[in-house]
Amino acid sequence: MVAALELHNLSKQFGKHQAVNQLSLSVPPGTLYAFLGANGAGKTTTLRMIAGLLQPDKGDAFIFGSSILRSPQQAKQRLAYLPEDALLYSKLRPMEYLEFVAGLWNIPAARAQPYAQQLLEQLNLWTVRADYIETFSRGMRQKLALAGAFIHEPQLIILDEPLGGLDAAAARLVKTMLLEFTEQGNTVILTTHVLDVAERMAQQIGILNRGRLVAAGTLEELRVRSDQSGGTLESVFLELIDQSDRDQTVSDFL
Image (cartoon, rainbow, N blue to C red; front, side):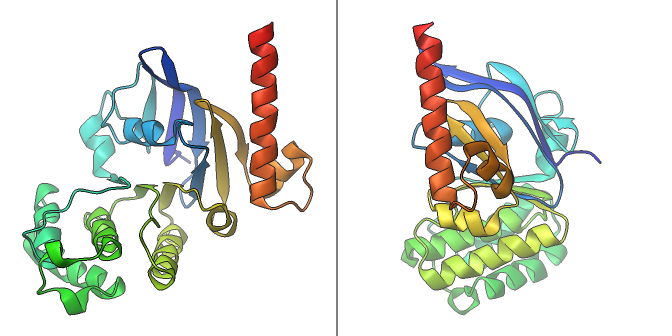
């Protein structure tokens, strides 16, 4: 089976700061994969390189076997990327925005319109379809941006803090939507600072620290790695970060 996402020694440096350091991993189709790490750990930089928005210094990312560097058009056709603060066009209405995004993907209007309506209804935005986006709250904008990520029916969606700005009801709606998406055989890669969300939703978890992948696997595998049998993801995460920092201190000393 071809991996939905495969990273080979992905690296990125900004000046003297090594943001991502030789990151390698493989994510099978149908997986919800959570990237966890403190601010500055390299999560967003990694997502931007996967999405083709940032050129890696070394390494490559493969979307269902297609290189984001050598075959970017083919790779991006199966990919959607939603940044934490997505750009929306305030002077458009929701349906106009989704039709605009669909047009960028060369999706015929006859195909895009019914799916756009379905997405707006699913995300409880259909009742405000006549309103301009500039009148929307942050949470409403976040849901509309998510609809824009879904409109070309990608097989892999990459989300940077997708639950930011959402109230409890909207967050639950989005979580249900993402889980249903993976149950259909599609793949979600997300970052989140809300560890209990990752604990409940993610089948696979990767922990980044100082640009390195310090641990990856199921929650149970991470518990074993951290000697935290039955521990919460929070306790496992903190222990693995602490182990990584201690190892790095020894390495720097040597």
